[in-house]
Length: 397
Ligand code: PLP
Image (tube, rainbow, N blue to C red; front, side):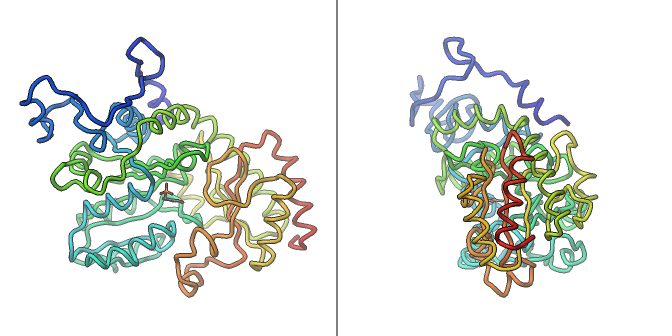
């Protein structure tokens, strides 16, 4: 499968022959007949639009491009990555159901499963996603979902999606994979995932100017999500705005170029950091415990992605180093990822702070960990030299 080619081969024209599709600037749509309106409500009038919380032409254009990228039948875009994640979990689970989830996942997803879902009597077992035995042990007769991130936030653990898919099929679970950290590099659906989620806020949009999400899956599942009677996307209402859908679609078209550059820059820095003796985690390094798993399932031309971590021993070192690198204009002390400029943060006190300290220790999230979203720097050697000087002055190399 060639995910970037699938995006490129799509054609959408504007209503006057514009080379970009027209932006749908309407929340509601007229019908020539009352009968068609009723049928659209029932979900039986293909090609008709009803109300933009349900769907809109601009959202469908973006959704079709993302479905093409992931190789799924279709998709539904949402107002945020969390809007995508929560609607999938709520659609698949009823009270009394159970989720088996990777224990290293984005803090917001963790907080939802750990603190919010139990209010609805949906329980989650958090497991080491690299241990197939631990996963099988955690599955109960109430389990409905096997949930993971293809490359996890922030520890960069790699899910063996083909192996997880076998387990999911054996126990009739839906394998839900958040692919936010590895768009294009990994194609979870091709490896056996049932549902693929992205926070579009990150690499896919790539401009750090918008929040968005997507659920890619079968036509049947996406129809269920949008159902006016019991669809979680329709009823929770985390709908993307059409203007945003149009702008994200335009940015999606350069994703393949950006990912190659993010990956090349991240690999360069990871190799350099590791050779300095820093504890460096990057799936492209032979020292990464799942390097071979990533290699076996990747679309090689896009590399190992733009995310890496180093451990500088203490939170104090991490904070001093990040402030210094920011002062030297090497990147920004900011959460999120996928920007043209490098972004760095200490996950234990930011994006993963929802995970209790004791739990952080168990999963190996140390306080000196710095997560880098490596930027598109034209001259990464120059960036490295300046980073090295910062590291020397903090005394971590
Ligand atoms: N999934 C991952 C892996 C993330 O890192 C994030 C946000 O940091 C999300 C989902 C949530 O996405 P959003 O912030 O767009 O709601």
